[in-house]
Length: 218
Image 1 (cartoon, rainbow, N blue to C red):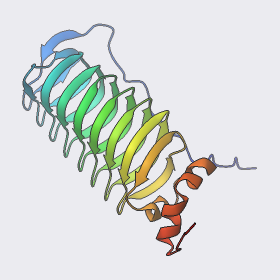
Image 2: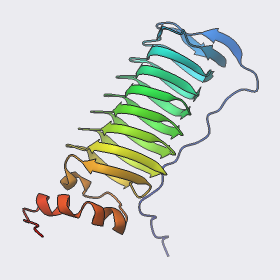
Image 3: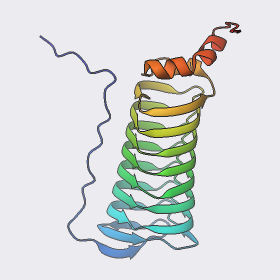
């Protein structure tokens, strides 16, 4: 007999494959770096279109990190705090962001496969038009999460608070929001196919009713 499918299917996020020893290095635009411990510039780091693999980004407090179009594979960010981390049009495979605070995390049109956000505070996270597969968000605090037009497969939240989610025109499968406390959704109709708890459904009952044209009074 065929095994029944787990629903929603959890994300598959492997541990990054890191070497035992890492060489100190700095990152620059279009660089090709591997097996390194990367130090960020306090002001701004321009690593657009770089290729970074099997590396750790050391804890730092910086103004900006530009990873536009960059390819990251088996990379860990350790306690990085930045006003802005831009990774538009990039490719992330097996990437962990652990700790720290980010003002704006821009993953617009990026492709992410196997990403873990662990204990990060993000004021504004945008992934409009992105492809997100196997993404796990745990112990995070997110102000606004914008994913309009994104394609999302196997996304799970645990112990995470989100003020607002913009879900316009996203396409989803196996999205588990049971571990997210979301204050508001821009359009609850876009929750079709998403897994919620009964408590979550009850707390957003008025929004669900309004989406159906129901006039709730009293």
